[in-house]
Amino acid sequence: MGKETFLARQPIVDAEHRLFAYELLFRQSMSAVSAQITSQLQAGVEIISNTLCLGPDWLLQGKLAFINLDEATLMSDFVCLLPPRHVVYEILETVAVTPVLIARIRELRQLGYRFALDDFVCLDEYRPLLPMVDFVKLDVLEQPPEKTAEIIAHIRLNFTGQFIAEKVESREMFDLCRNCGIEYFQGYYFAHPENLASKTIQPGQLAVLELMNKVRACEDLAEIEEPLRRNAALTLRLLRYANSAASGLQQHAHTVRQALTQIGLKTLYRWLALLLITANPTPTNALAARTAVTRGRICELLGRSRFNREAQDELFITGLFSLAEPLMEIPLARLLEFLPMPDPIVQALVHQTGPYAPFLKLAEASERSDFEQIARYADEIASSPEEVNLVQLQSLAWAEALTSEAPHAAR
Image (cartoon, rainbow, N blue to C red; front, side, top):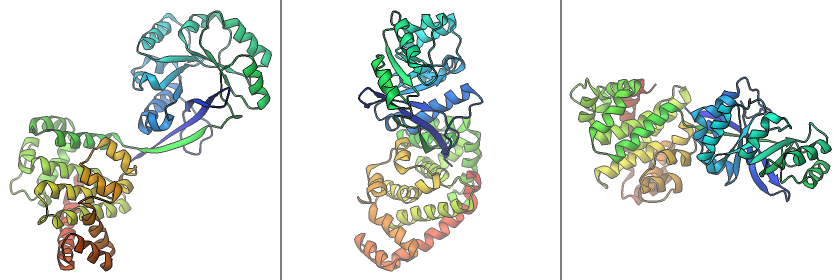
């Protein structure tokens, strides 16, 4: 099931009020108006992680992200997860300036990362950092304008970058800062932080998605066996499925290799898709998962006399994934980023067009007992209401057998 991801972003603008960047802020919930930070490391890592989950391109719209870092986060490998072109890392005023810190900043600058000094004050200990940073941020709410002007004049000899005024809350303050030579501005005068949320794919789901992509890309069972063997939960689930009546196998499988050999890559792909969709314990989603399985089976059976085996498998996936968005609680477009699918499936799921669309429409109409739509789409694929009725009954029985045995492994 998807986990809720939260961030806040506050615009940073230039003197003409044009968007230059966003500062990304840690939030625990969608309704939070400020961060309740018990660990700066956790906050920094969460912001980096959530930026990746939300997608830098969508989140930043081509602009820079300013992200606060404490010493522990700065020294960690997490800072290298985001591409340098997207971010400016703000060194918090609580970070002690040491030779180790300076060496770390030099190392990250060589990788292309840029830095800002946050809430800068004129202390000699910060002077070695001035040639190494691209921005200095000044808290103009906490000090009189003449103090801001004094700081700017004092550090110009060592600093060739640009200034950002923080906490600008009035037109008068904006004008004063601009007249002091400050290039960029941030504060309530321009915009309050905007809270953002998105469902993200959980690690367990990612493991399944990665395996599905690997199954599509290779024919060597050994390449599939190894990641399965490393994942104890998936191994147990696969063996349970392979030995269930729903799999249709005649022999018992006792190892991953035996299970893979007996069910084959195509069936493995289908099982992984089922696992992805049905692995949710809530009663509401259990019902929706059964509907998705039935829908996929209807599409597949209706395609038996009309398409080859590969297309029949794709019809099953089309029906199954038509309910992926409510079941996994992530947008379908986001899922397709992680799991690219053949064009006919995408056309049917996203655009309701293409060769598989009428099969999906027919399955959906069958669920609603919409006889007018059943007749319409049955005619479109050269079927009959009688065939559709038989296929629906067969699919319900198959789904009942599958969801009563195999999904024990998917819980």
